[in-house]
Length: 216
Image (tube, rainbow, N blue to C red; front, side, top):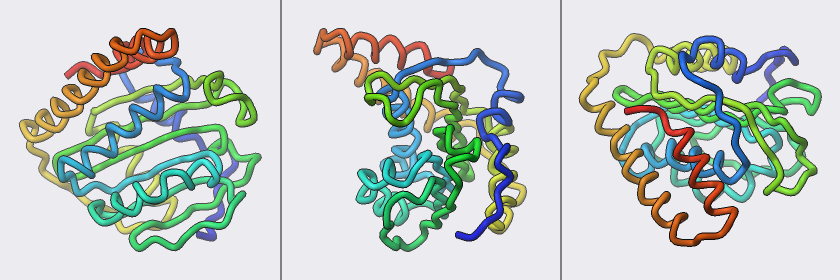
């Protein structure tokens, strides 16, 4: 998608400025699990969300192509940001947004889902580099279910990619709470499985997930 992007634009900075919670610092595996749970609200719980997903470079997106094909069938629309270092398949309802390796967004892993009754955002900045082993890559960032924050960032990103505005919506807080509770339950089950593995990596991931989980 030929969009002129300001190289200083930062989803992480915008989100961190308005999130009223502490910063989380976590490893790549933990970030992947959090991203999966935001996506699962669309895949498994039926949230018809607009999704913005920052993969840093498109080769990081390729392993998720089949999952994103299924997501695209359920989402309102999907926008995937990344440095174009590989050829990408055309997928209905997914728009690729190309960025430069020099852009601030190339340092950021983010995922936003905004639906009528569901809102969640993970916004992070990498503290390490792409070429480090996955297990050593770390990120600082925030995770929030705050619909006001999600709306602010979603409207900004929608304007950036020239998507139609989603407009004013009346959210049902009870439905949003149900989505959040399903997410919490799935993460609780992950924590149990990680604890059963008893490996140092699994224990670390369990602690990071538990610390990152927003309060419901």
